[in-house]
Image (cartoon, rainbow, N blue to C red; front, side, top):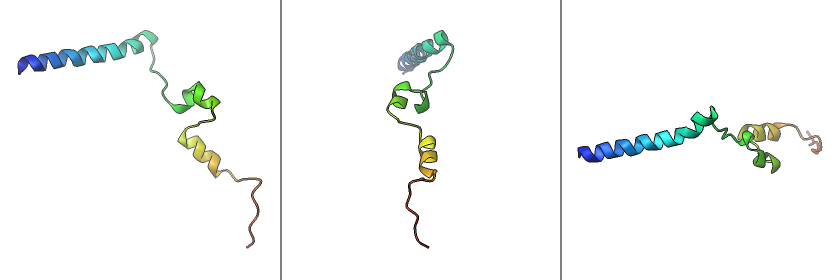
Length: 67
C-alpha cells in the first residue's frame, strides 16, 4: 500500500513539474481565451460576451412595427 502511494506521489509530482516547465521558461501563462486566439479572430469567432453585445445592438435596417 505504501509503495503504491509513493509511486503515485512521484508520478503526480513529475506531471506537475513537466506541466510547469513551459510556464517557468516563458515566464507567463498561455492565453487560452477566445479573444487571444488569432485564428479564431480571422474566422470571426468571438467570446460569448462580445457576441451578446453585438446581438443587443439595434439593427439600423430593421423594419419599424406599427403600434
